[in-house]
Length: 356
Image 1 (cartoon, helix red, strand yellow):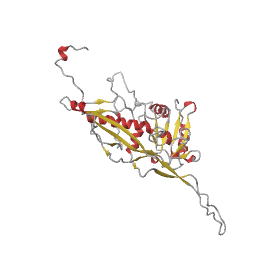
Image 2 (cartoon, rainbow, N blue to C red):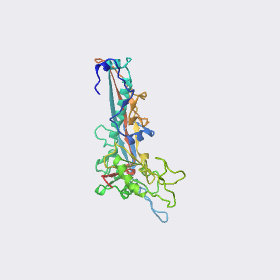
Image 3 (cartoon, rainbow, N blue to C red):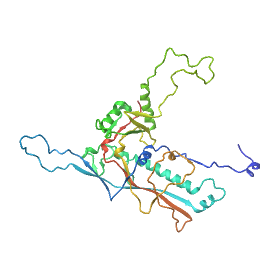
């Protein structure tokens, strides 16, 4: 409706004291990664020993025996380097000054900091699923692989050390099946061990929907042929007869479990992919930055999915600095370290899922 100057000239506008996030979506696995206790980075590089062979100097003997006492090489070191990420925050002095008048609705500085912090975590979430190329953090694309996407891992080649390979199963004809899920699970697990098996399955929203359609036919419902009808001609609209058992009208799953393992949907997950992850063997190693400090942005009214996950992200703050030739304040959120898995064979991946 077009308003005349009779109204516009004498009526103020009213701002709702909240900013609505129309950009960011779910970032579930990244939140889970940082919800757990982060490990501390130490030294120039992180080294994790990997046993690649079983010692063969042992066996049956008779009499006093003739033992094999030869020395054997059974271990090699996995080498990990840290990576770095920044998110810039710039605030113009003039704009900050205008915001601090009696017309302030939301604090410009705090809302800019919160938006930057949310953007940083969202971008890091993209890298968490990546290959760790260039200056990026190491991602699931490199960790959960069999040499198809990354021929080397932790400074070692996967052909020389197949112990670095994860179990990868491709969907035949794009079909999601319990049989193929079992194949991934079997390859990534040690039979009978609770710890040496994937602890969570992460997939896309579409993958979750497809899996739900596999679960649905397994629902069993019993009908009592002697029960009274639920709704009669004399029932009030929306009312049901008391003390009457009936089949509830609920349909669809809010949570899925398969073999006791929770399944979550993450919009960051690769299309058509289902990751089987052992969270005991994947951690964030955090490097404390010199001159940086941990900083939690004061609460501001931003309605965003990023604010729903109360993860303790190891984001560090440089503090605001004033340039010598600008009326502005500039600072950076910085994250140092890397996501590391020292036991990649305990993860798996089901790829190419498009249908059931």
